[in-house]
Length: 249
Length: 319
Ligand SMILES: Cc1cc2nc3c(=O)[nH]c(=O)nc-3n(C[C@H](O)[C@H](O)[C@H](O)COP(=O)(O)OP(=O)(O)OC[C@H]3O[C@@H](n4cnc5c(N)ncnc54)[C@H](O)[C@@H]3O)c2cc1C
Ligand SMILES: Cc1cc2nc3c(=O)[nH]c(=O)nc-3n(C[C@H](O)[C@H](O)[C@H](O)COP(=O)(O)OP(=O)(O)OC[C@H]3O[C@@H](n4cnc5c(N)ncnc54)[C@H](O)[C@@H]3O)c2cc1C
Image (cartoon, rainbow over all chains, first blue to last red; front, side, top):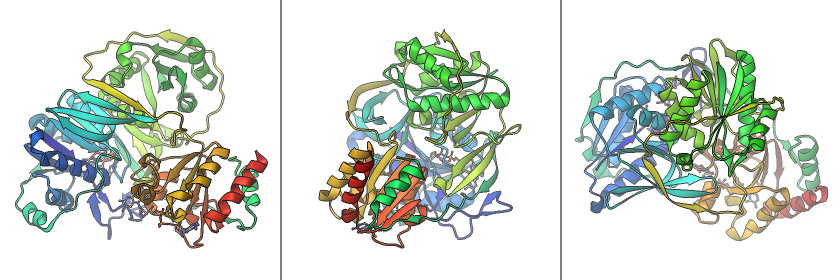
């Protein structure tokens, strides 16, 4: 079985969002780039699955659509334990553009199990995974909190309102993963970092695809009025404010 | 032409989000000078279907096919696409929840329609079609133009106040073509009886400042008197003080209740990412400099174990 993990290269989650060029571009000055947290968990789960020989997983490939500056992030995925990496050499324009690139690669290099995260920490689209599966015309399962392999069959746990379902699917299948897929992200060990330098990172030319959306500009959230403080000796006042001012009780 | 809205029901009753979606869609239909068509999938009676008319549906397309009893993303996407084509939909409105996140991206590719994911307002213009959405987990917003002829919008939870806009909708049943189903649900596990965290209007949430799992009694009591759900910060669920399903934040549930009460939560940026959509945030914390007070609308600097019993009493007094 071959696994593909989609990796979005995103600013560290504690980064303050700032914009340049008249608020039309994200200010990358001083930004630390990381593997999107969901993708890191997806990769962790893929490695856990591979470590059990009974699952007979031959290979874990990671893929990112991004310019050369995304390489340290994808190298980190190799250091954590992916076997090889693919970078599609294009500035990601929107989710449709990114998904079309990944799908094109997969058409020529098939995988059995594809992981994507539920949401990228930058544009918050929750879109790329589902789009890839539709381009490939393969089943997708979203809201996935568990993936196991039993006798060659992929068993997927899908969260639903107030519970979960056990889902099986024909392969290839794309799973869109969220909380629960792995406990803690795996960390690259020194040996992994050394080995990552020798692992293949294939740079692939993009195909021609037109993005369907375009960011006009960015806005900062409206500054909110300062917090109204209530005396701890006068909790009744809080209830009064919630009831009569905020009107939420 | 039309604006199509994909509704969701639970055992034949529409979820609240369906009314929000219809109301939102009907406002866009007004901007485009066209009608609102609501799609319902499942066994929903005519009375219930008609209730969508109250919020602005001009027409209801009802699909009831047992192949759709389980959520197969490919099958559902194909059904929505068939109805969108039949109704010449220029905009398709879907909820930004588990179901919407599973279907909207697939539909976007199927219809080659640009996706505006997680919109929280009406488009600022329809020519060019410009939407407003959060980016960087709520640290900023973007104005985005959707360039394709057909557009798909997913509406962020609790972001739109629905209004009545009574219509007397025509109900039509539709038999879609459904191909081979490639996924199978083997087992369903449900925890019943609990208010769903993501559906709750009020949420009472505890952090590490609660000190011990033994101190959750008053949190549950307050939630009880408020008709609220309970939540927690990540360390609290990591420690096993509370179930994982309660953890809110960037890596947990993203919620947008009317009222979020945070007790003993410092307000880390990753926590705020999951709750900043709340209409009103109350913080109770011993540290007057805790970042949670920057996000909060009302605050009390005080010990949660002392404030809680008084708060419970004060709420009981007014209920
Ligand atoms: C400098 C810079 C500028 C950008 N400007 C824009 C812009 O203006 N508009 C815009 O829409 N996007 C822009 N992006 C691209 C953005 O990072 C995403 O790749 C893409 O838009 C999808 O975002 P999303 O929020 O829809 O992802 P989601 O659909 O939320 O991502 C879900 C999952 O899809 C996979 N995924 C997402 N992106 C990629 C990727 N690039 N490669 C591999 N897998 C991926 C991951 O598994 C991720 O967890 C920019 C990126 C960079 C680095
Ligand atoms: C990649 C990443 C993702 C993360 N995702 C999440 C996430 O999704 N959700 C999340 O919550 N966290 C997340 N975190 C963790 C986050 O950074 C914080 O560590 C966490 O939110 C802190 O939890 P807390 O507020 O309960 O605890 P603390 O930060 O320890 O705060 C406890 C607070 O309680 C107050 N306090 C103490 N005693 C009392 C008392 N008697 N009465 C009242 N107040 C008192 C203190 O003043 C303090 O402000 C993430 C971190 C990372 C790196």
